[in-house]
Length: 254
Image 1: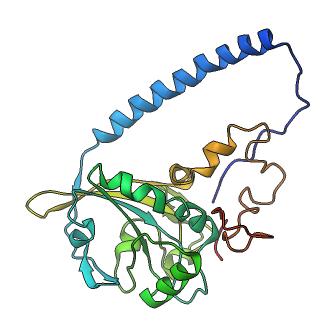
Image 2 (image 1 turned 90 degrees about the vertical axis):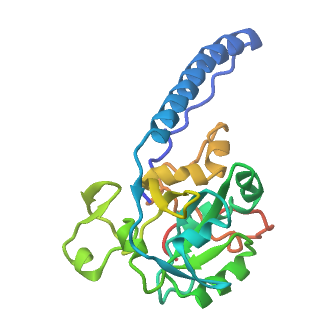
């Protein structure tokens, strides 16, 4: 995942409380600007047009085969994490696992806003269930194995795609090192049962699902990723950190 490294840390300036407060207030004004800009962009996002999903996608689930419209669990909105877990892999992607570690606590709150959170991967359902049990997750996770879903929504690439040296990812023709990529997609189901694709985001856009990052951004060391060969090289499956204490956290393909 192409995440930028932190700005290198410098020695802290030690100042009086009064000077600190003056500088904090200047930063607060900038933070409020960012918040207001985020609100305006969110409104523009909600105003995007929708595309009706015409293809009949069928997924393997713990309750048997289900069509896309049946995954909403009775709600109107479906929020999907495209999780990098290809057929034949022993375990899911570390960075996607880092994202998924944040899901279970959010699900009840999303449900109150008419939204179902779901994870979809190409791995067979048995492999998904085995890894999900290992990680202790409770969120629903289904398999798109055998369908075109991942390819159609820009997060899986065929051998022919990869052989060209460039794929269509994040709305750009670019080199990508894996045949699986991370992403988030949003769908709406109307009362007549029609399903519409309303939004997708990729690349650093998936950080919205990584609640640990904005918390780290509040600290003096920040993400502390400067100098790493890959910004997320520090991330592990949460049960693979040294002296793992059960806290959730997690980097790239397996």
